[in-house]
Length: 480
Image 1 (spheres, rainbow, N blue to C red):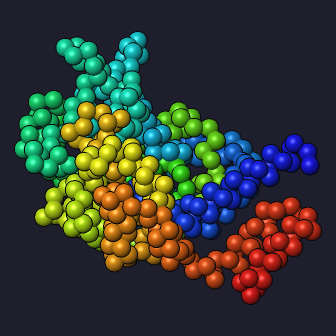
Image 2 (tube, rainbow, N blue to C red; image 1 turned 135 degrees about the vertical axis):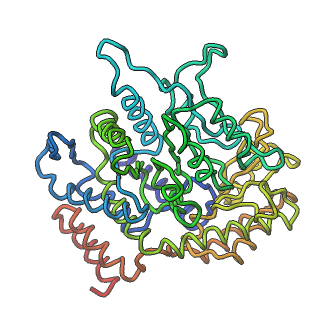
């Protein structure tokens, strides 16, 4: 065997082993991950994965700079319509390839928009002030100056740091904004951008409250909601556009069903004065931030959005029901669950637990992983830093999609508690529990999917007789 073939076989052997471990033997509770359906994955590896479709609006017409793009143009048009339906909004920008890029595209667009009337001989000015969620209180990294907000906010001359202020939080619940103090902060700071959204996300954001306050301001700050972690819960959790937000960003692979991409949605109405903002956002998406915008995952996102629009209500309700059942069960078993008990500990898919009495969050997360329960350690609001974290952050979205219900999460809570509190080995019991939940729900059924998958796979594979036989065998499984 040649060294080339040996390396290939070794990599594929390890890949298959990882697939089996993660998809059949582990219970994944990382709140920022999900497994796409079979048909979404097949779309991702179809012909567009290797293609380009650069385009931009010029003189009122959409101009494509590559040939053979009619199919992907139609995919983009259809995907915009499906996402407009999902969000109930008017504007969709699809070209960011991550949630972080989606945020950066918006920040670039806002800076260009704010400079729309500047004299030609003057440099671009940055945003004068921004309000967002503090990273140590669960704020999203991509909305911080160390993330995508970098270099878009003016410096505070007194502090020498970016002029970024954080949502004040309640003393007895640091996961919820203190709206009284927030109102005073907005009036004092007069920000040009307010960013809602978190990565440690247990409570609703005060969008309606802020929208009412800023409606009386001139100029009015732009309201943006980074829904990366809760994009798939739009409506059941919050409906930012109905509450007054201008822009929603997010990644399409956490609670949403899709491949790893980013989305910018807007609800810019004529006469609001923000029409030019959307033009700037589009131009920052291309040519400002992307060239090839990963057409394979774009096609996969259309399939995923079909699934989401079909199963949205049932999926969302089950995710939140499961999270609250999981939180209650963990609390009853003696694990300290963050959030307000009277409000069910969580309003999203996330459950956050405090584990410091049993060890550092990082060590407990490793112990859980060794027992096939996959989570991530998390700094809590009173921790000094992420490396001395006291918490574990978990989400119910992926295992909900594999069919787990509230009673199943209560059984899982017992295994988690045994592992954390008593340091018992629970790996075999976890594998047994996961074995009951291998079929994906909230998508086309396996018996209907497999024949369609075989047809797509046979169209991808070249006309080699061995590969054609493989595709034919797949078709035979579906009886077609």
